Length: 88
Image 1 (cartoon, one colour):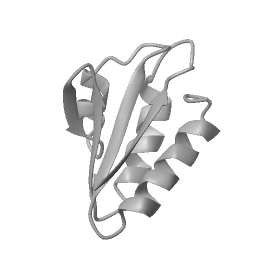
Image 2 (cartoon, one colour):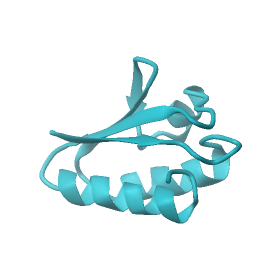
Image 3 (cartoon, helix red, strand yellow):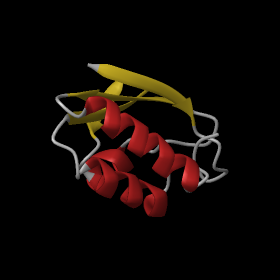
Image 4 (cartoon, helix red, strand yellow):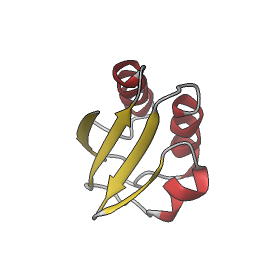
């Protein structure tokens, strides 16, 4: 299992548009991918789960992946969130 911890810099936080893009990216991988915020973890392949976390700006989140393609999954998700200007 691999994980990364990043800080949300988008002034609106992790909102619907970038969350949808990130969920779509996560869904392309076989690995189990979780996003954690304030001790609560949800499946990153579920838009409802991700949105239920209500992640505001300047929050530290942890994204973890467990499976055959875990490294590629984390790298892709990180790139997607950076491209959407959600994380620094």
